[in-house]
Length: 272
Image (cartoon, rainbow, N blue to C red):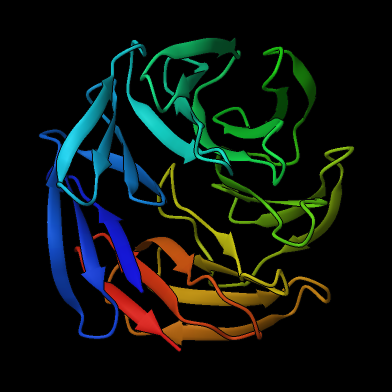
């Protein structure tokens, strides 16, 4: 399996998870806050108000989108790879055609967008914002479907559950994660731990591929794993020496899979 990491040095690196060695480097020039992948395409959201798509086979930039007027904090491919959504400090989300590079439409919000995700069928986008709100959008029309404010501080991450997309996982600077009902945006449960502290405005939490667990990194350097059904913190992984910025869970089935976590010093740890 290949792991992608984005960096403030303006690059995206592809890592061989078996050997721990970098396979290649994609260069963008400016700090990259978020990264996503679909097939051979890699997208990076950057502080220079743009989003880039690289072709992993050639390691060259295929598309450079410059529609935002401020830093781009988030990027996500649609499930079929035909579109891409970006979220920015300029309080907008933008939908892009990944084949032509054309900007399809702009979704306007009242707060900085820190995180985005597509629903499993690709018709709906969820966004997390600086004002503690979560918003649902109809991609076909650009209309806002619903909005709620489950957190008392910035939302740093939002992800649809892989188990039918009926739940949305959010992470916030209020040092809590919440599982929301995707239909109503009402909180189902709250996940927390006495030592859990969210480090950055774009700290990412994620589901396990089977949706049974949630993983998130703390400013204390600990990686926490919770059970989604019980809300119990199942494991606290301690290896990082500084704040953990983001976590990813390797695709697969069968419960425990490989987890990657990266910290502010640039170290990536792999956990089984």
